Image (cartoon, rainbow, N blue to C red; front, side, top):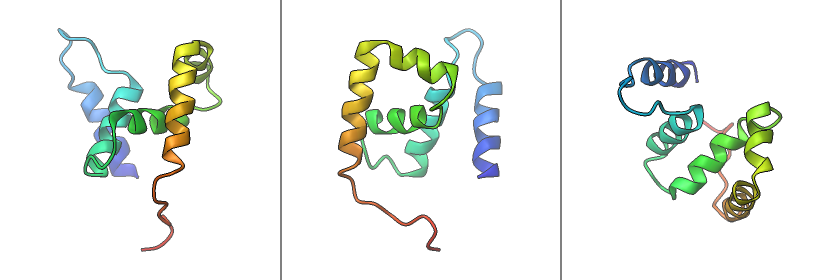
Length: 90
């Protein structure tokens, strides 16, 4: 997990200043997608990234927008239908 954190920090540091800076969620969703070999839609990875911010001001602001909230909730319902893996197994 430490390696993933370092990779995310490096991506953020070396992003070109001339183009729009990626958000935490952009970076996290991209890392999740790469780690998972792009098995699912971008919406799934974005929703998982937002789930990691649950309880923060950013999450509350995101969820205050009805369109964001609706899309997030629909995507999380679909994610519940995906095969579950036990992360504690080697």
